[in-house]
Image (cartoon, rainbow, N blue to C red; front, side, top):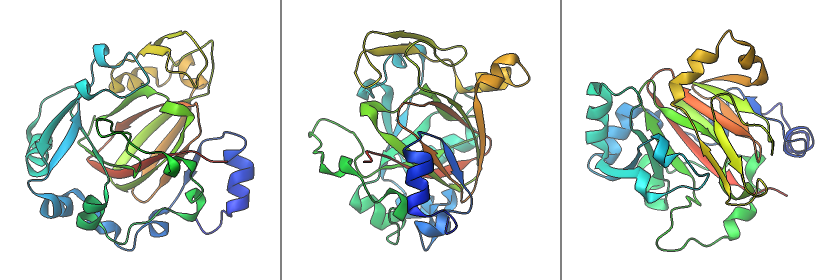
Length: 254
């Protein structure tokens, strides 16, 4: 991370809208990355209720998040679920990283210098909303992940993996095309809330490997300590290859 200057990142990746994998980036955000491992989180969070996302076709029809796709369970119960489930598309823990959670998980955690410019910080969240202005804690078993989507409100995002391995696929912004197997209908621009789509389960990524459609995507293997930058408007899909824990955050850059 030290070899990539802020100026180079803004010129070559933010301004150009290019995805980026930064290796060994955890020290730029945390002095105690081991505190993010699931075994340690289980001790730190215990009975704390956390959001777990359900994914099915009916709930993947819009780029906005909906509370209908969320159930809550204590963290330690979720860990037991990870160890025993037989679901083809497991529940994925996606918990807002509010200040009390930060103190419980890792009080040393901070935003890396590359992402310190963030106009999203000027937004105010309504009591009934859950935009995750402070970011999200992500935890999941193998085969969990996020279906094809692009991030809301024109935001970019970054994702720092603390444990495990995660496979990413990217598809560039387009008003006329969508990633393979995604059914999309555009009723306005990419920045509007009128882009509807039905995304298939994350494991369909495996069906693409070795096909001509795979060449239309950009693939990234994220390992423990790696950071992925997702530019505004880019479609992306993730699948955990092992048990994973991570932090992700949306932001608005200059």
